[in-house]
Amino acid sequence: MSGKLFLVGVGPGSRQYMTDIAKKVLRKSRYVIGYSYTLSTIKHLLNFNSQNIIEVTMNNQDVAYKEIYNRMNPNEFCSVPFTGDVNFSESEVVDRLLEIFGNDNVELVPGISSIQVAASKAKIPLDKSSIITFHVTEDIEQKKVDLLDSIRSKRNVIILPRPWPNDKEKEFMESDIALFLKNSGIDTCKLKTWVFEFLTKRYEKVFRGNVSDLEGRQFDALSVMVIDQVKRKTYLEFN
Image (cartoon, rainbow, N blue to C red; front, side, top):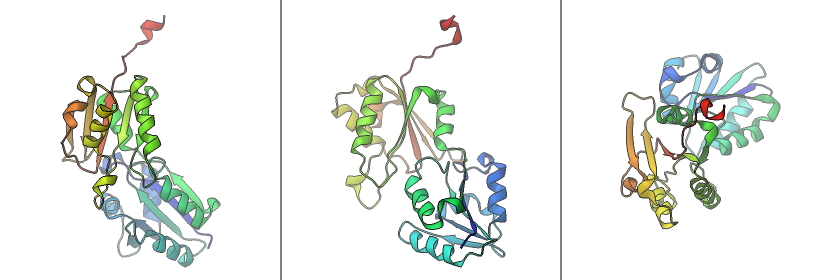
């Protein structure tokens, strides 16, 4: 097989946040493989008569990737769309696809991430923020340490929480984060936070308050948490 595989970031959910190059790549692909939610956000671009659209889950994705690898002709294209940006919180899948298809046969197409949108809505600079994703299957204990270090060093923090529907003990959602910080000695009553759900969708929801207010609250898996604690500085302060 020497066909081309594109790993495509398709934005947080709204078609308005998709790039032109992402649309172009998806339209020219013979095969499109993705999760149900991601495919639903790009269905307006797909031709179900001429393209092979394969919906996968975490359980069967590996079989599907290898099957398409073996089926593709040298002049064919395949796209795997990722919600948000392919370069953020997707490394476990990206690394496996590079392994299956080969580094030289794969091209990454970046997209607009929920992290970027959340930072814009909260008006916080990314260069003064720590960005931490718990949306992984690997162990997250070191990430918890990184979160504490960021809070104690007075940085903004943008967080992707960890939903885990089949095992609540593995979840690390907004309420869990709030309790973890409080139990680690952080005064969460004075820590400003935002939680954005369903970013860029017509039913987008925004919560704003203190981290302590998150205890016991339930948020959707499609959410981003922002902790805002950096003092704004303009160029006038550096003259």
